[in-house]
Image (cartoon, helix red, strand yellow):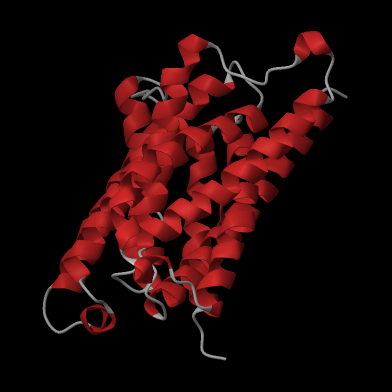
Length: 290
């Protein structure tokens, strides 16, 4: 009987990961189109996305904790964990979300999809480096993981090299291809690093508490970046398409996605990241002409 709950948990984690990647793929496609059809600055877009999601996640977290007995509630993290949560939030919001939004304003969503496998590859590499994932020389699985990460990272470098040389379609579809690729790499490194740090906090707090506070701290860090942009009204002007894309990104791309992603991170971080490769297929379907 004890095996049934464990199997159900694994099945639920896989369902969560599929939902995460479908939503994320939709976010990339819709956000890329919205940023190209409006004057909204990507950092402003990322900030408003994070701000809206912070409100939702904080409300959900408060509601869930208030339903618990007084002695079991955790509304505010302990002082010794604040620094770690700030780091997670900065990497997730100012790092991954903001850098990815800037990249989506420079390169097409199809190229962003090609870089999707880099995040789990970076995660595995970092996990090996810090000992979170143990490399066992006598086990074939460890060699396969290392080989998969190496091939994936080499593939990312190859894609970047091919896209930036010659007269490629990516050049014609991009505003600034080298800049977009640079921001993509930074976003992937941040996206691979924060779940590893998040894993440490999840050992002491429930997932909805971690999700809420990492977004609150991350949004506060990104607020510093939007201050210089407040003098240009065009950067804050949303047309209908950009507004709908922002609403999608707040409710699904951030709030729901972060809650699911944090739940999945409670399980095996590195193995769950491999499902990110499915995002490439979903983006391709979304980009098909109607």
